[in-house]
Image (cartoon, rainbow, N blue to C red):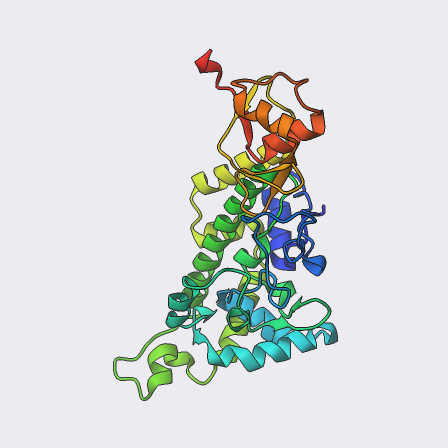
Length: 323
């Protein structure tokens, strides 16, 4: 079963945990970034990424088992990314839990516009061929589930947000589980700073990471959930959004939802609903209908336009209790 282009470990788990394959997000074309392109008619509220960074102005938190996967991958096709990781990782926060940005990174991160500044770019970014991810096959939960545009708009956003929460919780839980399984112990009187962090594994850090991956790589999806201590309500919320993204049926009645709008120089109106990087351009006539109507019948717009407005939650279902 195909399950989107997840990293191999996560793809195996998702194939076991979900009732069907995850749809590809074909509009989020990383190798031809749609947010780096300027629309033919620009609006003042349009968002754009720096072509030298795309959306990669973010340093991922890599749990110990993914670090181990990177360190023991001997595939020549991965050599460049692995070498980059070996160079960059020691300059970050390296602990038994994994490799992550130092604390002061987050202090600066909140002050910078996302997708803009080269000095905030991911250290594993390979600056060629339009920008490549050096650790793509071992990227973490956040990088595996973030998209600028979605096939199903807000429904896609909701689904991937839940998947991100699930995988992040699995990552954190399994990182803790690995530490317990490998019996890391911290001495009361450490000999040096390294022993303060690594205890009885001091000097064997690479082996520790690889052993973490060995422990996790053999887990099934349900076993990963169990060892990570995932609560049933989180998995239920994932399944709920999965079924929602699979259904393309439209409600019988729709009404305007929450949106912002901007008049364009070409006479159209650009409307933005529940997805920050996704908009739809309407004629003035269409926009006036959108603003003035309390409820819409199925023949007000063409089906494809209805679907897009609904997916972006510019139009929402009329609550039957309101009748």
